[in-house]
Image (cartoon, rainbow, N blue to C red; front, side):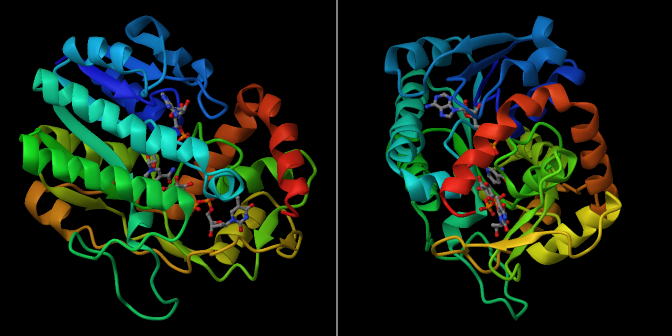
Amino acid sequence: MRLLVTGGAGFIGANFVHAVVRDGADDVTVLDALTYAGSRESLAPVRDRIRLVGGDITDAALVDRLVAESDAVVHFAAETHVDNALADPEPFLRSNVIGTFTILEAVRRHGVRLHHVSTDEVYGDLPLDGAQRFTESTPYNPSSPYSSTKAAADMLVRAWVRSYGVRATISNCSNNYGPYQHVEKFIPRQITNVLTGRRPKLYGSGANVRDWIHVDDHNSAVRRILADGQLGRTYLIGAGGERDNLSVLRTILRLMDRDPDDFDHVTDRAGHDLRYAIDASALTDELGWRPEHTDFEEGLRATIDWYRANESWWAPLKDTVEATYQERGQ
Ligand code: NAD
Ligand code: TDX
């Protein structure tokens, strides 16, 4: 299958490309604008086995040409950091909404299969206490400029399926962790803070809950959906990994032999979503998908080891990221 992967030089996309190449895929094209969040180095292990096109998903002529040469598109490309969206939403509108529209128009013209990668944040948040979880029928209720643009993109995909018969599926996944995640995000930020002699930074009290999934499990689910998902359907992806931020931070500190109180409380995020939790039973029951990385502490230990061993990948980004956080009081 000729596969076009948008955003394949970012965190989840690069791990996806590594996995499909490892399993023998021999016709993979990555389209990535190589923004601050994308990196050629993330694709270095598969450099000789793929084609990397530096370009923007809002470039209709380029997208049209690449889609015409493909059998399926897996669409990861997006602006993804909530704090950046709060500071400057414009790039999120452009990449996430206009970018997805551009992809949709191309797959419509060429009759190409699309899998659109989205987030559980489109559903808003859940109360901290309670057993409620998001399902495919939970109403959309996004809180941030980031999640509202992802919600808009999902709506476009649904409309293009219904109105034009585009052959698409959507997945909404919970918080990912693992190798190659940008150091602006929670887990890599805290690991690299410890590694560079900085104190980890916790927003507010740290009571907010995220439902953590290893990036390889997210990607194995995307591949199941691409192979056997029902066209037009939305699938929720999660691995039952709910934890509050303070507990995650304390686990990182323990695994890195630091004192459990060796961190700073900083200004909370505006509109900070309280809790996300996924009910993935449609995916497990209908498509038989199962996560493999079910021991979070083990996954976190391996992730810490990866950041220790790959300082050359993240060190050039670190000072700039921390300077921006400092300006924001975070
Ligand atoms: P990331 O920020 O690490 O990578 C995004 C990639 O997209 C980068 O390589 C960037 O250069 C590229 N990109 C951005 N705008 C582009 C444009 N206009 N044209 C071409 N390329 C562009 O993000 P990620 O964490 O890997 O997330 C990938 C996808 O998964 C996103 O759609 C995100 O919404 C979704 N998602 C992420 C998570 C998570 O926990 N990280 C969870 C659920 C869903
Ligand atoms: O330094 C920090 N301290 C802190 O307490 C940072 C960067 C974050 N946090 C908190 C905010 C969140 O409650 O940690 C939690 C996780 O933060 P992020 O890593 O920024 O992730 P989140 O906002 O939950 O969104 C992520 O998951 C869903 C991705 O960035 C999105 O792209 C994805 O859609």
